Length: 144
Image (cartoon, rainbow, N blue to C red; front, side):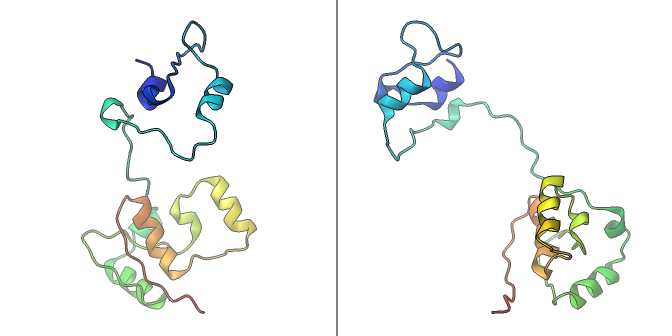
C-alpha cells in the first residue's frame, strides 16, 4: 500500500495511484482532478494506518542572557513590561527582544522590515511558551 493509497479514499472515486504514476489502473493528477472535480470536502483519512515521523514539540532554546537572570530579575522584568502574570509549573522566562526567541531568519526579516523593534508584553511571554510546546491563554491590552 502506497502513501497515496493510505491517504485517499478510493472507493468513492474508483481510482488507483502508484508511486511511479504509470501502469494499468493508475491516474495522473489531471485525471484525478477531473474525477474529483470541485468538491469542497477532503477525503477521509484513517490516521491509524499512517506512520508519522516523530515531531519535537519543544522548539525553544533559551539564550544564556535569559538563563542567567535570577528569579527576582525575571519577576521585576515581568512587572515593568506590562505587568506580565503567569501561572503554571516551570513557565518559560520572557524574552526582551525578537532575537532571543530563536525565530527563523525569514520571520526575523519580516519582523524587522515591518519596523517592530521590541515584542509587545504578551509576545514577550507567549512566544517562548508556545515555542516550548506549552498551552497558553493570553489576555492583553489592545490599546483600542
